[in-house]
Image 1 (tube, one colour):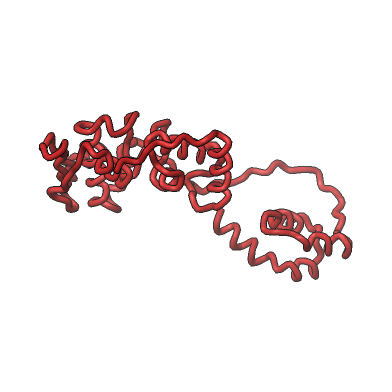
Image 2 (cartoon, helix red, strand yellow):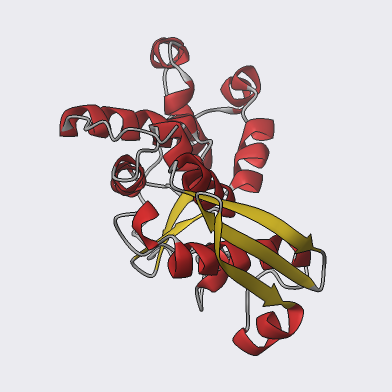
Length: 229
C-alpha cells in the first residue's frame, strides 16, 4: 500500500531534525538545516522521518534517493511494478509493469557506467548497476511515482565526502596562565559529556594541573575524540 503523505508541523520537523543530528548516527547531516531538508523531502513522497534520514541525500541541490527507496515507492504505488530480469557485475536489466502490462525495460551495463563515469564502479558494481537501472526505469516508465525528479547518488557527477582538514589558528599574545583552585575543580567535575571539550581546552591551555588531569583521565578521551574528527 502506498504511503500516505502526512504533513508535520514545521516545529515538529525542527525538533526531530535536532534530535537526529544530536544522535550522531547520520554523518551526512551535520546541521539541523540539512536534517530538516531530508525530512521535508521525504515527507513530500510519503516517507517517515527515519526512512528519509536513512535513504535521502541532497547532492548539488538535487534530492538523491537510495535505490531501495525508489524500488519500494514503485511497488507501493499500487499502479506500477517491476521484475529484475538479470543482475550481476556486468549488467542489470529490469522490466516495468503497469498492472500486468509490460510497459518497458531499463538496462544498464558496465560499459554504460564507464562511459558516464558512474560513482562506486569499482567498489560495488552489482549494486551500482541496479541503482542506475532502477532510477532510469522509474523516470522513463513511472514518472508519477514522485512529485519531483529524483536521482540515485551514483548519477551525480560529484559527491560530498569528508576530507581531512587542517585548522589554522592565528597566533595570539601569550597571557599569564591561571590554574584552577581545588574548589573550582570540584565544581567542574559536575558535568556531562556535552562539556568534555571544555576539559580538553583547559588541559591544552594549562589551566589544569597534573593531578587534576590524572583524575579526569581525559588524555585517552582526547585521543579517541581526535580519531573521530
